[in-house]
Length: 210
Length: 210
Image 1 (cartoon, chains in turn red, brown):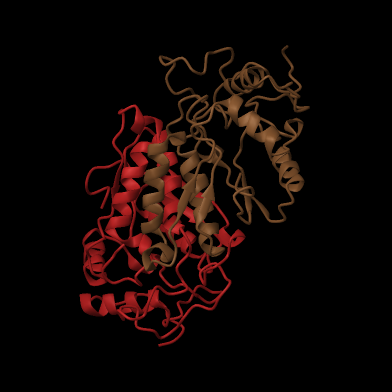
Image 2: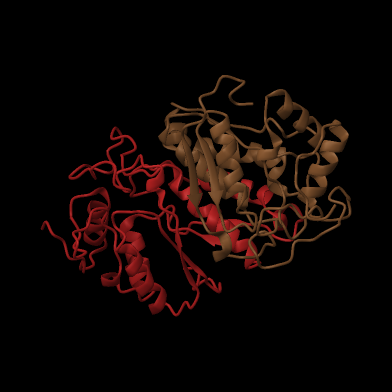
């Protein structure tokens, strides 16, 4: 979407000790397919703090309803993760003399993570202007873009298909098998699967549980 | 100061590709002397982005007046560094079920770094409440404490002496020699030196340039 809007894109991924580290290989493929030549994978092992199912301390919940309003924020929440991700993006953005940071969060079909919500993104954007030399000197006005924020998974999939994305390259599962097969039962698989169904698009994901 | 206020302290330092990496050994000594048993040194090599004299791209300016109001923000500014530091602290804080983060910035005798100013800290604190599960659920109210914020270097030194700190253990220089000797000419050395003079306290620092 950033490319469609005319931006020159520099891609940033994080090797943060996630169970689904195979998402980095997926990110490399997507970056290559889009013709992006600058891709940093930042090693920041958040297992040093623990406290999340995604970084290995706890089991990934299965077969829940991710959209249950009484479900609470699940243990797959990684403490301050998107704050850390955006902080690194802000650092690189300032070095590149860029102003625009894109993040792929959604607050529609999601698990209720606090750092996917618009109020968080707005507060981060405000803080970014005060945190940086370019912001303080008025030579840059940082903007956090979250084009998926108010889109359902079905709408995201349709937009991706429209942009020529091959979703077979992509990865969502929180708890894949060693061979990369998706579990089919974590929040991320459930939301992805429903999204393909609702969009009426064949789901190319290889699931362990059918 | 946090200990004096009765907090149980967990210490966090960053191995971020800084020239003055020997500050980590100083941090270890201070942590040990204070009886703190939990100290994480987070490896986050910011040389991946560059753009700062502190992470090696550029020379450290010498013999400037750090307090010259026309001096601008010097190249020793590390893009978004304190934002990144505080983001990691926030992650650990949430895992520890703590609420209070202390950071040793000052906005009096300093080089004008934007991420040492009270308005930045306030914006970060506000964002932290929205970024986290504990903040969103109302089970924690994160506070960023900067007890040195409005203190001169002389006042900081006097407070340290009063708390029994042996400043011979500490390190400030941005550009130390391989043996750890301070350069005596960078902003950090100049401010430290003046601080000891103004405080009327003998400076235990070993300087290369006298």
